[in-house]
Image (cartoon, rainbow, N blue to C red; front, side, top):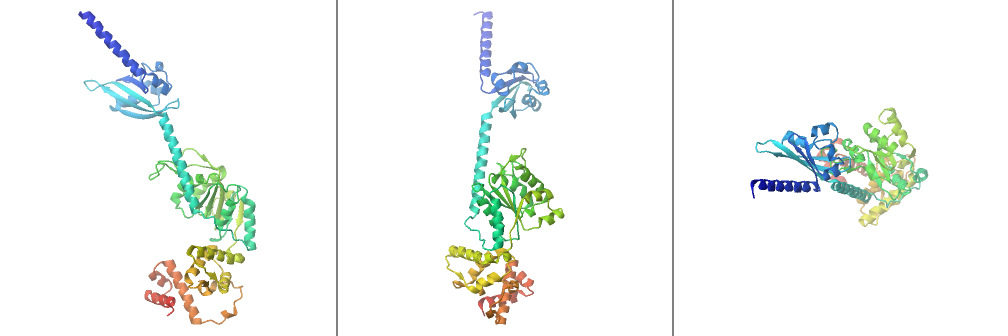
Length: 470
């Protein structure tokens, strides 16, 4: 073979190699985009066109700077690789709706100069969709888990005790509104049973198969209130869960949310809460779009909201939004016919819990009915439990009912047997009650003794003497 034939053979081999290389590039599943060392486009394959929706004829021979300025592409990995002299990886979303990861790799000559940049464009749309689907499923699982936790914390076995006319009046209005979706405001002192009324409204509503979510607005720290109520997106702030968090309003979707102590809401939160009431939508912290919800709101407070509106501590517009259907729940001292059945209900629960068979004596029940109950039903429940613990017999006598004589109702007649008492024993009993109350409040002997004007040794000695009957 002479020199000319050899040259032709070499040329033919190179041409065949180039054709095969072109075929490989053209049939690559990934998009391939090649520029020279000055970022001028020299090669674009079919996959790149499919992924990006761009035509190679509009790009061949053009500089990446020109394509960026003309908004043909949003950002050039090739330019960044040339500027920074390193491999660059970027995430991009194209007008086709496809999401891809692009990797631009510079190629150097023997003198260390960049002569080409090869950009690989990998379509990850399906992977992104799978990731989003997994994220949605994780959120649904988290939502279900939180609903289960709330359901476990709810006790629906208690029946509504309403034998007094005043209670029946309140219950009548609760019954009237329960079948509607109107916002309800429950008003009453601490411990009157506002939560039980809220549950009654929920259980008799058309949303009874949905969630019942209780939120104590006064128990959640102000800096956590927004994230608890409205939730947050992943990465919304330092320490946020990697998957974000569903807020309690979203958790209550298609159900009822009970907002206890609504008067404790800070003013800045009242503005955001007003939007939820008006628009039935929430926006998570770090989120960019509102989320529609369908929630029935039942709120409660022991505060005078009208007075708070006058003092500018509660928004007037929110006040009127919440006061669609107010229900006043009377204190226990104004519903005395409920005292005995409530006491018997609590005693029955404790008997079942501890395997007891205890009963109230006539005198004990009379004493319960005479008491003023400043702490309402909550105080009655606690006092019944204390009486069960104190009494050593199955019959709970009046001596096991730890109430202050001065807080009995002045309108109730005393038994004749109460006219003649052992003054010394009665004074000791009263002193012991104050000592026990001081110790429970202070949590230690020193502070309890100081609050009663005693020295710690005297406090310990008297407490031991009175409890042992010495």
